[in-house]
Each structure stands twice: as structure tokens, then as C-alpha cells.
Length: 319
Ligand SMILES: NC(=O)C1=CN([C@@H]2O[C@H](COP(=O)(O)OP(=O)(O)OC[C@H]3O[C@@H](n4cnc5c(N)ncnc54)[C@H](OP(=O)(O)O)[C@@H]3O)[C@@H](O)[C@H]2O)C=CC1
Ligand SMILES: O=C(CO)COP(=O)(O)O
Image 1 (cartoon, rainbow, N blue to C red):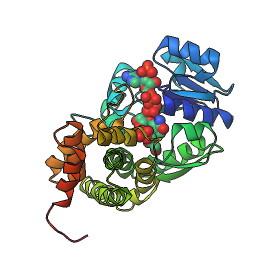
Image 2: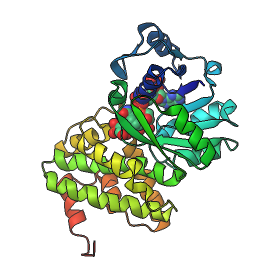
Image 3: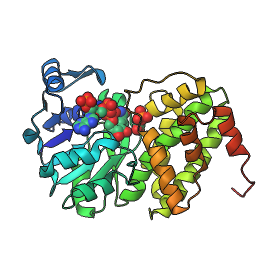
């Protein structure tokens, strides 16, 4: 069994290291030939995941034709997933596992739905849940969710993708799994902004809890199974991302709260996802006040204190 990983960013590289360390032959595809050559020679991704060595079982290449292994993981940012599939029609008719977390701007779709649209003869799955690339690469223990609507293919992927430090739980609810991974990033921006502005940990706990309720409302509106969001892909990842400075989404929030600039070259999925989700929520007439406030913060239409005031001044209701 071989695995190909398309996208040699922090997460793709970390997954390659974990799988390769477990003895699986891995081909890691970087779109930039110079990046691929440097990684293949130095056995490190110095730009995105410095300090983690690639095992001998991992080959890095920019030749797309070399990357069509038994199992294909797509580890590119959400807003580039459709163009990757469009540029490589040979990915159709295969089993593809999305490793990205987000909602597509313009369509309001998550990764599995985008794969189904762009490569209609594909079996799509998603690997999601709480894990920082650096933790995976260091061999620290993690537990993730593998979601695939086809039960048998999901079972086989679960077997192929476990590693000594990645334990996988399985579900057929791809809608719930992809929503949890996408929306927790929006909540992490809100929580980072709250802490950055010095509004305190009590406010963060309130935001996480009400954010979780908001995530569940959207999940219900889109037909997800009611308990999926209480698992690793929802509650688990929300907890990790809203409380750790390792999270880029949380760090963007911190910068907003402190009134500092943030490096726009860093992948922060929650920004586009907040906008895409706010638009989808309006269509579905689903109340998502924290998401709306995050969009207003990102657009610099309001500051953090005003954002919290907006949330606290909403009509009183039952929990
Ligand atoms: N980092 C983490 O801890 C985790 C990340 N994820 C998710 O993984 C996904 C990827 O994030 P991450 O790896 O961290 O991001 P990075 O910013 O580290 O890397 C993104 C990678 O995607 C590549 N890329 C961008 N656009 C394209 C494209 N059109 N075609 C091919 N490759 C492309 C980039 O290539 P180039 O270098 O040439 O620009 C780069 O290698 C995100 O959805 C994220 O939420 C999930 C769990 C943990
Ligand atoms: O998804 C992640 C942890 O599960 C990584 O979070 P960030 O993209 O915010 O760094």
C-alpha cells in the first residue's frame, strides 16, 4: 500500500513523516520544483515545518505523474482545492482524502462536497480533528476523525492511514466532520481576539460555548448527524484551536485584539471560511452571530470591545 500526499505544506509534510515512519511508502508532491528538490535533498521542509526530518520512506517530487498512489491525500488550503482538482483531471475516479479545513467562498461548500463537484466519479473522504502539524511530526499522540460516506472504503482508509502516533476514529457523516473542522477556525479567531484585547478567559469560555452552539445550528441546518460535532472533528478541534497559540487562526485573532498587523502569507483558513459561512447562514436563515462578528472584525468595521458588546446585547434567550 502506498500513499500520495498532494501539497507539501506543514500538514502534508507532517502526515508524510508520520506515515513514512510507520513504514508506509509515501510520495509527497510539492507544486514548486525547487521546493521539491530542496526537501528531497535536505530531508526537511525548512519553510513550513522546520526541524522535522523526513524518513527514507518519503519521496518528495514535483512530478505529478509520480503521485497517483493507492491512497491520495489532498493537503492544500481549502480555497485552492477546486483548482487543484480542475488542473489534474486524472484525479477523478480515485479515492481522495481531503485534509483541509474550510468552506469555499462563492459556493459555501466544504472539501468533500467540492471534491464531488469537481471530480464527480471520485470517492471522497476527509481526515480532520485536533492535531498540530508540529505535534504529529514530533511523534506526539493524536486522535483524528476519518469520515467517508462509503462505510467499507472508510474502514479500509482507517486501516491504511493509522500510524504509531495517529489514532483514527471513523464516521460516515462527512457533512458534520467537515463543518466541525471549518467552523472551529472561525471561533478560534474570535477567541484569539478576545484574549488579545485583554477581555479575559471567562469571555473566551463563553465564546467557545456559544460558538459550539452556533456550529451545531449550522450542522443541523445542513443535515449533519446530531452527535458528530461532539466528537474530535468538532468539540475536540474547537478546544485545541481556541486555546493554543500554536494555532494560526487563534494567532490572527490575537493580532486583531491587540491591533497588530498579521503576516498575510500565513495560511489562516478561518478568514475566508467566516465570510463563506456568513453568506451560507443568511441563505439558510440560520443565526450565526459570532461568525458575523468575526467577519465585521476582519473587515475592520468594528473593534473587539464593540464585537463583544454586540454579542452581549442580543435579546435575552434560553440557553
Ligand atoms: N498545519 C496544521 O497544523 C494543520 C493544518 N491543517 C489543514 O491543512 C491544510 C493545509 O494547511 P498547511 O499545510 O498547514 O498550510 P501551509 O501554509 O503550511 O502549506 C500550504 C501548502 O499548500 C500548497 N498549495 C497552495 N496552493 C496550492 C495549489 N493550488 N496547488 C498545489 N499546492 C498548493 C503550498 O505550496 P507553496 O509552498 O508552493 O505555496 C503549501 O505547500 C489547511 O486546510 C489546514 O487547515 C489541518 C490540521 C493541522
Ligand atoms: O487545524 C489545526 C489544529 O487541529 C491547525 O490550526 P491552525 O490552522 O489554526 O493552525
